[in-house]
Length: 193
Image (tube, helix red, strand yellow):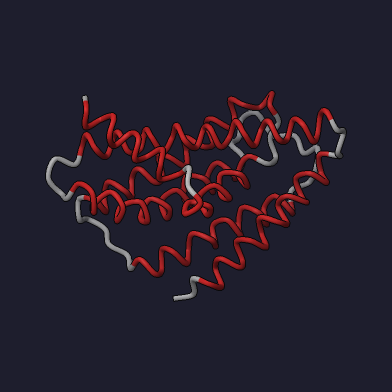
């Protein structure tokens, strides 16, 4: 149980630091188009992302997949760029068809695969390849918990601006997405392999 707490804490700490700003920007970009009332959709969205990065984290930790770190570090900001661009091109008031999952859910899952490759190096440097299952589970659950904290913060800020301060929702989503886009383009440029 002590090991579980340790790796759960490491997972939380891995997200809630300045070094994880790319991850925080990605989660923020994913959540911007949603309001507090949409919290269930956002939890599913972030969990899809967690599933994606859990898959590649496990495969990489077990030595089944290896991608050069510099390429992963370059691709991560590109996932943020794509998500921010999707927000910028989204039509406001667009109603989601109840029988279809929005494309953003597939973005989250696919982009999670890329982000998981970056997490693998962090986890492997702590654990090694032996006895990886419990640390992997605890680490992923810690990451999920931290992401949900980020989501709660983004939904709260959106609530303040859109619902209390009456900023038009389209301005909020596009304005913040433009800032996220600029930050992620800068990151991508700095991380060019």
